[in-house]
Figure 1 (cartoon, rainbow over the protein chains, first blue to last red):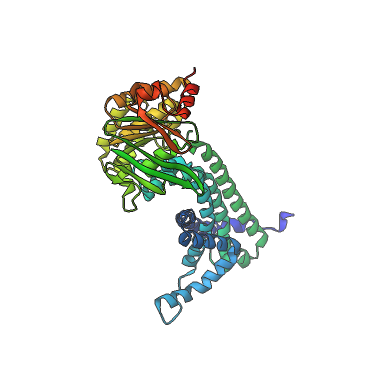
Figure 2 (figure 1 turned 135 degrees about the horizontal axis):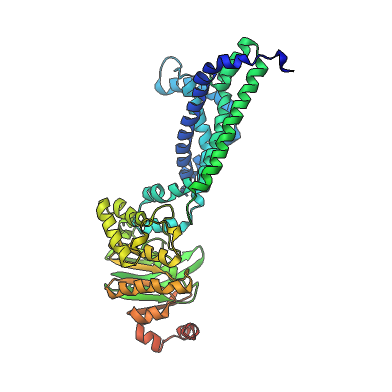
Length: 230
Length: 242
């Protein structure tokens, strides 16, 4: 049944697929993860602060982000951010931010909601006595969080954080709606150009599978190695 | 050194501390005992502001603990505290546990902090365990590290919140030995404990609590010979039977 297929097209487009496409995908994944974890951790601290002016907006933000489809967010940001930029800076025209910047902001803000919930669970898993001990040694809030609570929470939650990153890696393929050349975008463009849809999409699926599966195996191995001795 | 005046505390409508007044002079060792639920742990946690209280006043070295303007972290850095469940930081080595607050809170140099840490580990007999993680030590060893960690801050007073209650019986003595040595060195100590042998040996005074109230506050010998209150008499007869 494969006699009509031309798998050669994959070999020919490998540099384009990986150098242009995969580089974009991995860069976006890495930067959005980094930004998402930082912003998510701040959101988690806000939610757990016990101060309504901080915890309520954070909770609202997280719930909003988790209730909206990601594709919609990508669209909204791409079309809205230029106008918001215009409004903020008072420029006469919408400010062009570019597809990469726009998608990076979207993914960071969106994933932060999920990272927030992971970090919140992680922080809550640290016994209250640890906080008391840090305070009894004279540490202030920032030191208690920075040296005692967050390092342990982060370590406990690392497998879950990395699993979420793998999901993020797959989700970045949604930027194809902005005609961005990420890995799937590149594959899609080759597929359209050469009329080789089945081959390219099969190959793209295979690559996503191999990377995601290998990464989750690594996470499992890591899990046993980084556990805190108790 | 530590003065408590008419301290009362409520959890919602439930009153855990009722008009508690006592003091610990410099160099004095005061044991706080009483049945469980009598508020003794809560009382000692109020002393360094880990628990808020609603009425009365507590001062440590003339600093008011309950005052909103008091820099609590600064005050706490001068008061050592040892917890029932040790509360060593499990993600840090024993040495890092001892060094962290010295460097970050007191602003000491790393080399000096490590030197001080090593000296204290030696004092509690755990010098060779400096590079281990807390999870690799026994309960008794962990509690001795916790005492060393508190001492590393050069505290003016030490608070002990049931330091031996979570230990297996055969490990209690190694911790008590360290505490006895500390008391004999003249450290100001407030100790919540059921270890009456320890109280007899080193305490200057014993405070007996029941239902949130300080029922008895007497010199050690007096307390053990003939406690004034009936409640303390029954408590003592129950725990000293064996």
